[in-house]
Length: 149
Image (cartoon, rainbow, N blue to C red; front, side, top):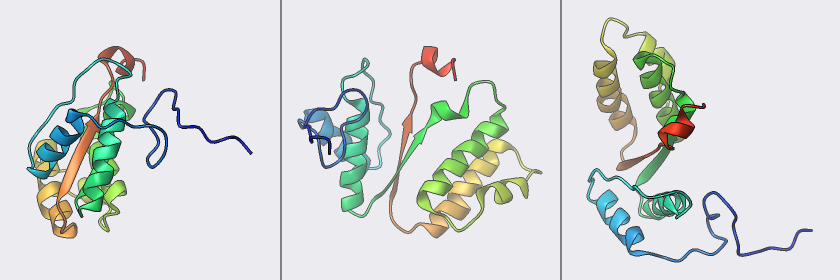
């Protein structure tokens, strides 16, 4: 059996384990999320952005606020706007375990534009099915890395 360690090399610090030092950014991000504010977390590589996000999502969940973490880089860069919108809705739907099939819902409304469908999905599906508050975290790696996906 491997010996447990408090150190994490690369990636987010494991929830409930590892060593995490609370920073002012932890308090600031939680405050912004609770207030429903739009926020960016911008800084250089390997300084704790992912750990900050995961920790905030966990704390919000403890308060009854649903958190969704979507990695925008998995959608790729050589795709249509329609495919991007559908990828986003599918990721959100899967994490929130919505009963509505996002793909079927999307395809049944092809007479509308992508932005309109996206907005209607949030208003008529997500907000109808999820009664709790929802915070959406978007992860987007650097443009140089995203271009390689």
